[in-house]
Length: 267
Image (cartoon, rainbow, N blue to C red):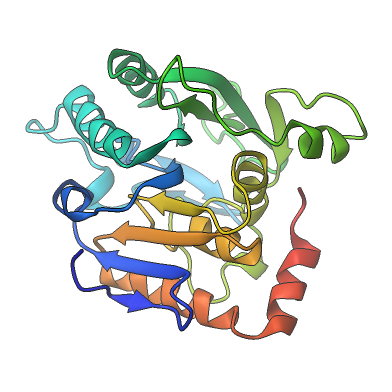
């Protein structure tokens, strides 16, 4: 493994700086779960509303599609690398919108994964559609798939039913977008809420399981993993986001901070 950018004192949170296409082949670990929030390739100069202000939707160079970027090939290559690092009973979650999710689904099937569900994340506080020419965009999708059709996956069905009022949980999840309390150390432009990652982690992993995020961003996956007693490896190219991740993880060295975060998370 490449020299980590940061490792927590008890080695349950490891950050690697670099391109996942280069770093994944260097890893020897097998992961019980992978969560990936890959580029959606939707940064095109458009505008939206955030906190009552008109803002550009461009996320960064990594989210811009150029003539040299083949989205289908990009998704196929990173998914293949991730498949090599899943345990036989492991599963993978990939978030997206219509910009990339159909490509992801097709490549999962071609690579031998079995798609289990496509979760619709309904945002309870979506930004308004300022053009008034479309319905307001209020959802994202999260595909859940296991490594192969023949190998069973881990799923804590009983817990998911219990937290849903003793009723089977559906594939439509209602969560707000990230709150201000999740941006204490800085914000990633596509940051996912801790509540969303918490449900995913509790549903498909067990205590001390090892979780990978190949597009770690500000490491919401890793923070949720450590809060609930799982281990984490994250890969991220941007030094600024890695520094935010490090600050967020150092907060967890304070037990009172962990309990505060738990109190704000909605499962």
